[in-house]
Amino acid sequence: MPVKKINISISPETYEAALKLVESGDYRNVSHFFEQAGKKLARKKLAEKSENPCEASA
Image (tube, rainbow, N blue to C red; front, side, top):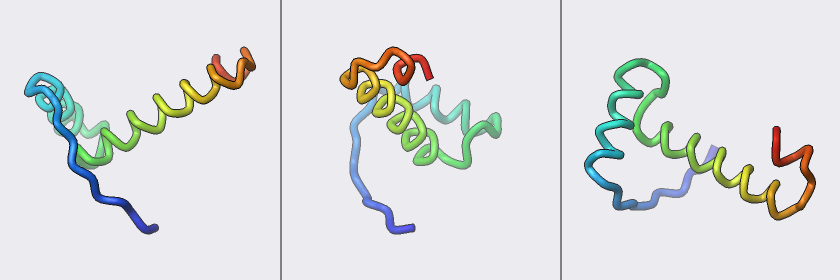
């Protein structure tokens, strides 16, 4: 699957929290964590904008 490389700036606290989750085995790596977080946030925001309460709660 083609990927798009980007740079982000995050607080040290956010980075440390992501590292802990990676070390616990919940995510493959920090990139995987942020990709999953971005997907979840995007789905939530798009569902809210669609004004469909069923989608927003999914």
